[in-house]
Amino acid sequence: MILAAIVLLSIANASMEGMPHDPQHMSGYAAVQIDPEKMQLFGVATEKVKIRDLSKDIRTVGVVEVDERRMAHVQTKFKGWIEKLFVNFTGMPVSEGAPLFSVYSPDLLTAQEEYLLALKSEERPLQGMFSEEIAQSNADLLEAARQRLELWDVPEPEIQRLTENRIPSKTLTIDSPVEGVVINKNAFVGMNVEPGMTIFTIADLSHVWVMADIYEQDIAWIRMGQKATLSLPAWPQKQLIGSVAFISYVVEPSTRTMKVRFDFDNPDEYLKPGMYATVEIHIKTGKVLAVPQSAVIDTGLRKIVFVSTEKGRFEPREVQLGFKAGLYDQVIDGLEPGEEVATRAQFLIDSESRLRATGGGMQGMEMGQKKNHDR
Image (cartoon, rainbow, N blue to C red; front, side, top):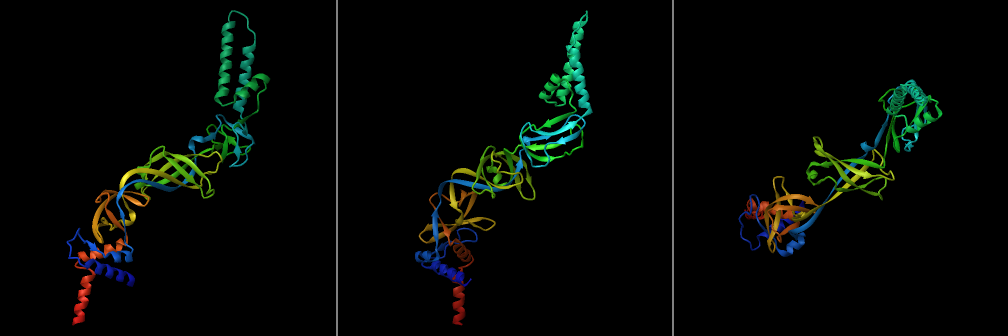
């Protein structure tokens, strides 16, 4: 605090050297004059305001989730009982066409027997005046019996086996419709299954979603199809490239964020459901007038910069700013290209500017001290 007072006192003395009292440049602030030598002592630095080709990065943390479009729910369309399990635990990888379980169903056994009877009738030679009608009727019955098996998802190889050896199977083996990982298992030997009951859920993890929260002020920069880079704490050397696939229509009231879904290919399955991942979007904002963020003093009601109008002289200026990009803010109003602004020690300049605007700042204090000394 002592050092800050000395610095402020030095700025006040410097500001008054050879300088009449200036009118306020804006309400609550006054211009400040600093001797060039003291500018170097205080570390005052300036930078020109100019047109810059800016870019910004939006970083957020997301959670890896299963792609809902690549989930298979294994069910049966008939009643039965599980007789054997080929997949015994959740998390087990399975190939497409690999057996999951075998099920015994009286209804399915009856349907096979009906198919065999229809097949036998269709193959029986016919004679007489109604032979053509009977043959057509037998063919229709055979087709109906076959369709019933197909509608119950009996595989074509199983129907072909039944056609060739004419022996109905007591059980039907249910195979995996996709290659993936079992993420839910609701099956045990002897369990009764009903039509529509989900017995296994298998997820293809070669392509996953990452659900991330984007703050409300950044959502305007997010576009469908934008490229995004993903990194993982588990494999910091790995980076995956994905894209924005969905932007939520609802803002979360408690966090003021919106859900954004990213699509990522995951051929080596580094991404596991439930993992945290850092997602970064690099956005080109284009060429705009920009001011260094270090030059801006945010009072809460307005944003102020100190413009160097001549050597050692700084005037306060209220500015209107747009988006932030890296170390710079977009300038909407208040500055022109080529103007210089203070980027270091501007808080000391700000303090003296406020003091001068209220009646002379440090000089007024010095005069009061001198009068007390004379008494």
